[in-house]
Length: 89
Image 1 (cartoon, one colour):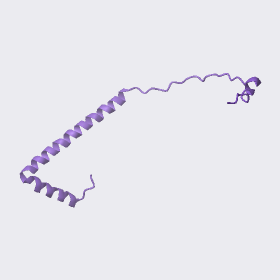
Image 2 (cartoon, one colour; image 1 turned 135 degrees about the horizontal axis):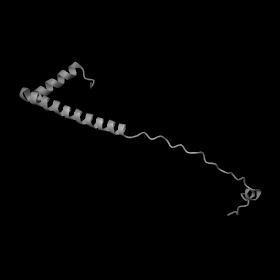
Image 3 (cartoon, rainbow, N blue to C red; image 1 turned 135 degrees about the vertical axis):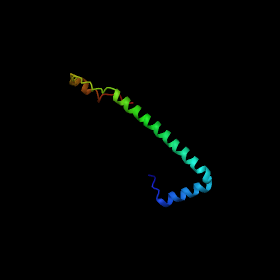
Image 4 (cartoon, rainbow, N blue to C red; image 1 turned 45 degrees about the vertical axis):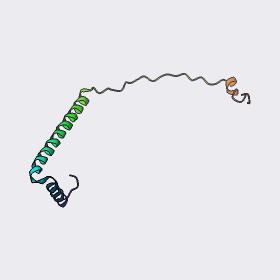
């Protein structure tokens, strides 16, 4: 799950037993389990809400447009020659 081997888990349990003592350890485990359970409920509720909102939205088809007809006008010799006749600064 977290890449912890059996020795690492044993060390963590021994350290927790030394820090919290044998009387507090069951209470700590119970509250930790309840916290994880509440977190899973919250995330699953959020996941269900997101999935239902995606299912409720209709899928929009792309609007097909007709091709635009364009008329291209060829440049006249008068306009084509004006490029070279710009005033020099």
